[in-house]
Amino acid sequence: MSTRAFDPKFMKVGILTAAYQELTPREVRDPDPDRAIEDWLEFAREIGASYIQLASALHPTESDVPAEAMLDPVANTLDLRAPFDKTRATRVRAALTATGIGLSDIGYFDNLLHHDRAVRQKKHDFMMRMFDAAALLGVDAVCGFVGRNQERSMDQNLLDFEEHFIPLLEAARARGITYRVEQCPMPGWTTGDNFHNNIAYTPGTWIALHRICEKHGVGDNFRIHYDPSHAILMGQDTRSIFQYLKDEGYGFLIGGFHVKGQVIDARGVSAWGYGGQTVERGDWINGQRSANPADHLNAWKKQVILCEHELPGTARHDPLAYLQNRTVDWLDHQLAARELLSLDVANTHLVVEHEYPKARIQDRARLTPILQGSVAFVRHIDRAAAAMFALQHEVLSSQGIPAQGIGRQAFRS
Image (cartoon, rainbow, N blue to C red; front, side, top):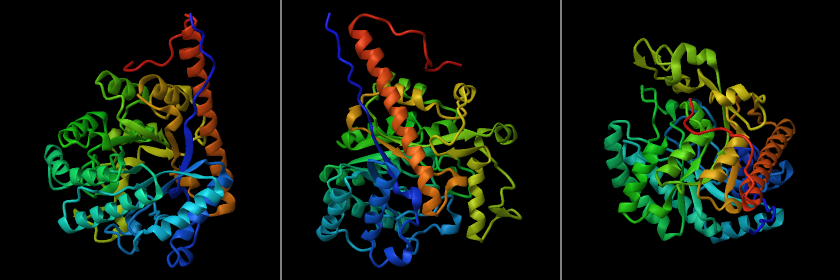
């Protein structure tokens, strides 16, 4: 019998730069776009993150969605109005080296299957600039959404994915880049009644989309950036999702993580169910879609009426809520990832995403200790899970000693 050494593997803890959109004021960063990245790298070091996920987006002056209609303000830390060339890449690489902070990937979260051909092309052109920037910066992944064509059914959207999204993945493949999809259903993206506006919202569609990718030789370039807050929103739990992927032979699909929770409001669920508020939200006035973009923000009541995003560590420890899938059990999340997925744990990124509304403070002095606490919480939870996994599944297992108890079980009701 060979005894395994205790050798826990930790994930790479980082933060999405959308956590603080106005770190660098617009009057400074608009004329000097890479200043925003330099400032964020210094800030990441201050709050204790080891990596940043670099947020990008169409500049507010170029976006098809007015800022007042957005639940979360645009974070274009990576400004791509001007080409990201070798000179800009050299400057950013120097800042990465100087701060000792790494770059996990670049994130651009938009509807890439938009029904309007011109709008869709604008977003695709922007994504191509993202791919080029990622290649120049030496990162191997871009993170974002798939989206949905609002004028077509979900089955028809699979055909749209094949026609319009596969060419993006082919461009990613040519640059050695993986596209990782975050699974948010984006219910408030439209004032219509659709709840699922990003078709890659659940394991069933991930697998359907990956099969299309495989048919076109880009299966290795399509992965999932898993965010447990969206599973909670849809009544799912992390362990069961991971078990389902493993059972179906797709445990390899998840390639990275957003660390963001969801706290379900039982009163809101009692009023509206998990479909959220369907009528009298305020985005429609007298039976007509409001002409005021600010009213369109009310479309998000499909989500926010029944839940609130959690910045990891800010929600009270609540074992009953964990069992009811009404908030994320972070320790079991990290254990399940190690136990059920095909991960290179030491090279897997764990990215804190801050969307807790009451703490979305654009004030450095106030926000800094909040993010410091959340990043520390995430790092210690991952270390605790790593220690438990190594002890139970490696050290004890190598000696034929069983772990005690049963633990959380997939599919249990």
